[in-house]
Image (cartoon, rainbow over all chains, first blue to last red; front, side):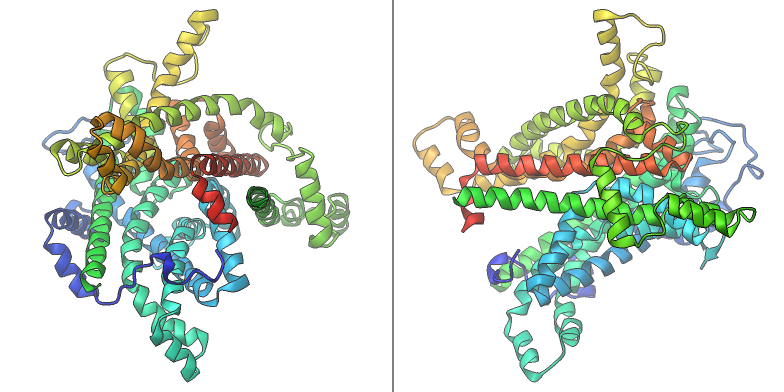
Length: 312
Length: 327
């Protein structure tokens, strides 16, 4: 906790593995290849869902009978309103992935910023910031998110769109960011602590660079890779949190995510009607995304570990 | 002396966290759209004088700090969590109070089963690391870990309740069901699937963590010594590896309590289990903020206490912790 922890943090200092390099290294592993292929496929359907399944079906445009099991016409079956579940799930990819990715960006910005400031400043600022981070780490932040989302929505208003994303979803993005930055902050802080003692940072200090410049020029480039590795895990966590919030009913019915579809399935009593297909498609999509992210995250971690070991 | 200082530090830390939660709750309370002066101000037929009178009545004319904050903390500490909007002005404490036991039942049993099974699975896969059994075990742990709790619950209902008809689909008891021993059996039959969902959702992360600590411990010198002494495998695992490898899992179980509760809330929704989770959803739908805040405060305090207990347990199990921390 205190500032006298020097290189004993066991922090890995990584600067050799850069973006393109990392991708090439990842593609050498078969598990990462499969995971990246799944993520690419999901991302493609998120970018252009219309290309694959046409426009999003609504209660008025749905033509099929309700709760049809999977068949040649409806590969994944239909929901209680007769909407095609393949259509809903592919369109859900866009919402789930965009909300997940945006939340991850906010989480990384908050966590990275706080972690770097705490680690570089040390002393009281560090102690206070890490105290707050620890509080967020153990609190039931999910319950906090449940309270914050409707409050934020009430304050912002939920009838508008920003860049094609409805503000209901943006409140979810904000809430996930606010409640999940702490583990990133901890990781980044421990990296920063060990970087701070390195000669190149000391030299920058001697030359008279301001703390902000040192953080931007010398600390940040060296923790970028750590942020990427953490970012993948954060995306998976954000997608899970988003799906849970939407399942409970905080999603947007006009822009349904996978969690919203599962929430619909629950209110339509799909489990007790035996309509397994209503549950399978959106839930399977969440599962595949999270597993793929976890595998890629683990692979990056192992690569970085090896990278450090080789150079030692 | 050292130990006492360490203890005081831990308890002080826990108190500081609870204070921070109260502060957070206070800020939320002020942001809340349901706050009386805000709600009144939106109504054009309420005069400015009436609003001012209401503000005085609610103490909102006083400065936020320290008056309002002190009043809030004082009321909360004396057990006054405010009144529920949905349940006709009943006290929040009584609305929440009756939902605690059902939640505690499924979360507690689920957590115990998950710890036992997760430790067994983790020790087994860690011992066989790199072999076929390890691959299968680790993959299953990863899959369980990546599933949203509520989805797992929905799958279990579809399979075991609807399709196979072994267990009831929802609720806590059969309406008009039997009392006595038969009533308890009925309760357990209803609780089985929610407990299984929570346990399965948790096993994954405990197993993954224990596997890596066992695998790490296997490389230690004392394991080699134990082998050289000719100890049997299960004695090495039980007597030498597990006591060391269990520590991170104990911490994770405590650190995770907040996360587990979040997941358990959604499980209750799937099974219409009348606990805090179902209450949360109802409160959310009717924007019953006092109840939501009460639930958050209750869960936050429980989690902080759980962490404190885990810290104490940890220091009993591993003397290095308290000596290292007091140095």
